[in-house]
Length: 118
Image (cartoon, rainbow, N blue to C red):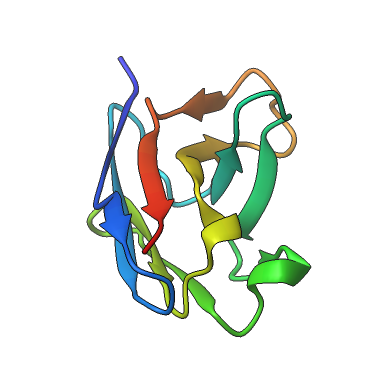
């Protein structure tokens, strides 16, 4: 059974930092795309950052220069370092893994709340 467990969310003041981590079990992530998405109430889930199996990284424009995604295939983990956080970054953040070709391989974590507020 594939499981994704996120950690690291919480409440932080504007300008602060948080680091999200996602540990994957039940599948080897080496050939999978790994990423982080976020969702606010009433809105669609949106891409934050992804890292492909061959190291190609993509960021949403609004987080470029502030967020850094990284993966460790040996540990089956993906992390998101978030710096200079803004109130508009407040959302539930979800970890995702997927195979770009085999579309049935697409799994989500349970989500972790990030709140940026003074």
